[in-house]
Image 1 (cartoon, helix red, strand yellow):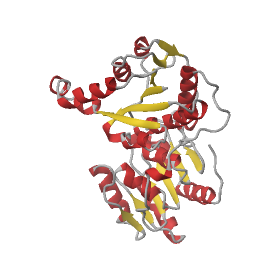
Image 2 (image 1 turned 90 degrees about the horizontal axis):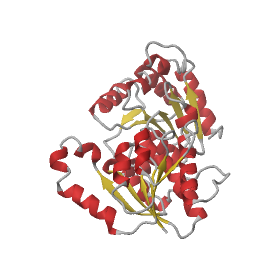
Image 3 (image 1 turned 30 degrees about the vertical axis):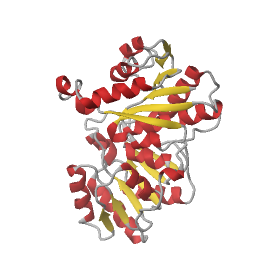
Length: 333
């Protein structure tokens, strides 16, 4: 049985779908998957042992010049790959118009979220089998339920397994053990104040830890440099790809992350992680896995005029105590 998964973005959403693939592979040993994903995240599905082919697309890039790019060689190649093999089913795990559009290009029974469950209700019109999945479940559990209903097996009672194979991350191109700070996010209201990162790095230094600061764009690089410029134990890493970050994650002692896809990558690799949440809900998108500890802002859900104030209410001393707890084994899902 061969199934095409359509889950293109974002990084955290792609990672949240991996346990559903693991469930299906355990329930249906003959099943194999191909996966359509945005080019920036194409490495991640390939790390799962049940995924044979990754079909990269660049809808984010192509839609900037649609009249040129949707007639160009990259789009033609993507369409060729989508039609190259026969599929027994297509599962659109995203529930957006763009993912529904991709699903319609494949001649196979199409499964996806129904109008009540999907983020964009009109996407449900593209599916042969729209399925109801409650919206108040964690993102990982929603994907697990969708796959189980589409492929007709019971949802396992055990916690989800990301199924990432260690062989996919060969070697250990990691720095000396220390703490990795994922300080960047695409949304300003998810950012933790720089002064708090500095205070936390100082506490880490007093305890003998080095702090590693990755970055993904110029703004994050500048923030990393400002933090490192105020504490002697902090080091700004070079710009790294997902595979390189995965290797480094295997070697650090613990991670502190805001609500960002890289924090979910840390969870998928079972790295001890403290994740900081302000306007987003731990219940729905909290880092899922072993060795994970969440801190929700004490102001979350309240009447706060400035959303960024929510993140500032998480005190560095509380985060430091949480790091000590997660390193000692105080974990949760």
